[in-house]
Length: 56
Image (cartoon, rainbow, N blue to C red; front, side):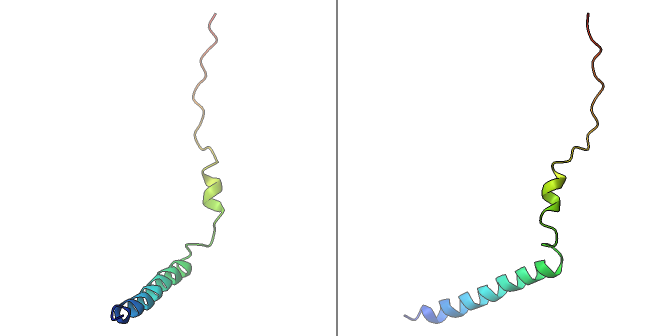
């Protein structure tokens, strides 16, 4: 039962720390554009190499 005197305040502090980290991420713009980075991996910026001449 005495362990609850430690665990309850510790869990409350942990919730506040997690909330502060989340709030800082929101304020810095971490979650502004959720779809943009997903589409940038689909765009192919590489130029195609030279094609081989037909053999024959």
